[in-house]
Amino acid sequence: MLTHLPVLVVLAPLLAAPVAALMRGAFAPWVVATLVSWFSFVCSLLLLAQVSDQGVIVYSMGGWEAPWGIEYRIDFANALLLVLITGLASIVMPYARLSVRHEIGDERSPMFYAAMLLLVLGLCGMTATGDAFNIFVFLEISSLATYTLLAMGKDRRALTSSFSYLVMGTIGGTFYLIGVGFLYVMTGTLNIADLAERLPALSDSATVRTGFAFIVTGICLKLALFPLHLWLPNAYTFAPSAVTALLGATATKVAVYILVRMVFTVFGVEFSFVTIPLSDVLVPLAIVGLLSASSVSIMQPNVKRMLAYSSVAQISYIILGIGMGTAMGLTAALLHVFNHGVMKAALFMALGAVSYRMGGTDLKHMNGLARTMPLTFWAFVIGGLSLIGVPLTVGFVSKWHLILAAMELGWWPVVVVILVGSILAVIYIGRVVEAGFFKEPEDSTRREAPAGLLIPLWILVIANIWLGIDTRLTVDIAEAAAAQLMAGGVVR
Amino acid sequence: MSGLGIWNYVIFIFLMMAGLYMVISSTNLVKKIIGLNVFQTSVFFMYISFGYIDGGAGPVLAEGVTLYSNPLPHVLILTAIVVGVATTAVGLALTIRIKESFGSIEEDDLHKMDPSI
Image (tube, rainbow over all chains, first blue to last red):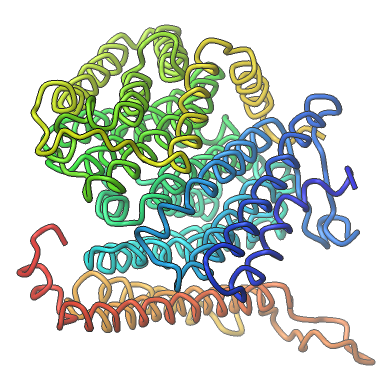
């Protein structure tokens, strides 16, 4: 069974999704979704252990060797991403029970859990596969599940936000498909390892360069790089809380991983950063996105929307790391992918608990939260500190590495930008903390969120602190992953 | 390529641009979906043209035939067509729900009702 781990991670949610959809009531599909997420999480942890023991794992689907069959190829980078996706799914699923009953209702619950499982399946599939076309198929599976989940929000604007994401997401996915088509015409293969071998000889070809442009633009639409982020704020604001927590933490991160895989493995560092000046495009966009999105989030009256804009800013940090084109920059980017997932999920889950008790996530609902919902509020504060990058939280670890990477290149203005971004985060998180501590609540009776919401939330908050103090696990894996990716091509 | 010339690719680029233009310029949500469909179909066209080989027969083993067209792009596009149909279905379902809850599928009207859309 251990040799089949790469496919089990993906297969378990695939099989469970229709089962959940056929069930009645809210409880049974929830149990299925939770157990399957836990199963996938255990598989991912075992995979990560296997990768660190034996190196890269290659799994041929159905026994058909590549290039005839599709192969799954697990190295440090995607093992880390698999742990992130399935780990967060395992925490969000238990949390979803009360939150979904409150926001969606029992009747539509089976479909909700089926769509959640399809989302997890799509994200895991994109991460695990070693085939460029297979990535497109899983990308569309996860996107279709996302459109459905977004539209389940209570507010009617959830529908329009889902529609605009459908339009933008489909354009992004199709751009990726066009790019892959160009690569196929030039190389005659869709296997990522073979592509990586054959492309360096073709780096002068205009077709390959056009393909590169299509792929990078398409994926940047999916990962919401400024100025392609316009679908994101509305989508995150109006989606159900559990959906925002999972999506905000994982969906854009997987798109980042695909970008990394394409730029570093398929095209290679030489092509991406020397032949094509990718840094000159990504770094300015990341800096503008970081500053503008952080500034916009200061002015948002709705806290969920504020965090959505902050997600755009945090994605910019990650893109900044990738744009540096160095091993240290890439390490920082991968670290921030993981760490931002952990902290954003905690923040969105805390907001979900507030919305459960207070009926909304506007700034006025935060008034006096320190007295009415202290545990939820403190979870939000710790998540917020992590977002700012205060030492002893995960946010500090990745920002520290990003600053080190910028200093290594001598990019002092970029170091200043990163610090200014943190100061802006202090301001927007500070507004919420101020309301929670000093403003008078309308009704000051204590009404803490139920344990079903608090326990998953606090597990994540503790993970935020734990991984901020004990950095061996994440930093070592991110460094190993960056070393593998920078080596170019594919480690056989 | 000379059999078909570059004619196929001209059509592909025209359809792609027309589709994208429709998505951006129409304010009606159904027209946006139609544009999206045209855009996706153009890509199918591109892939299918890739697979064609001058004088190549259909990829079925037969006696006396040595040159076959490449069937792989066609198979890929079969998958992509399914994806396209699913996206259209979800898009149309969303449009119906938007019509039910807002009473309009014109972007201008929706924007008037709520500027954040």
